[in-house]
Image (cartoon, rainbow, N blue to C red; front, side):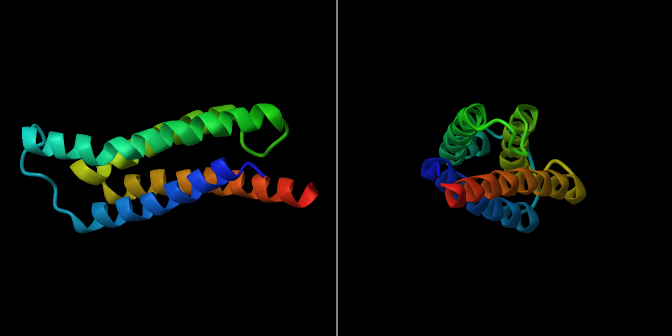
Length: 125
């Protein structure tokens, strides 16, 4: 099993839960163009964007080495973009809750498919 990919997926899932709680419990910022908010978001989200980039690259390599998985490269690309959106929406609270949850659930679906593939691979070895 690709343990780094597996660990990164679990970290992303944990962070998504934190972001969801933040989205639900936070108030919309008074001014989206507030420099202090921008700096806070930039600082707090940098590790999340790094993690997102890393898991996406690892997942892409994994799919190249293991063709025939239930996740397709386009799904990876879309999931990476959706994670970026969820990160930003959780701070700026600028989409309806329904849309946020659609992104959140879509991300989890693809990540769960990857985890299943990784687990199946480890039992086949």
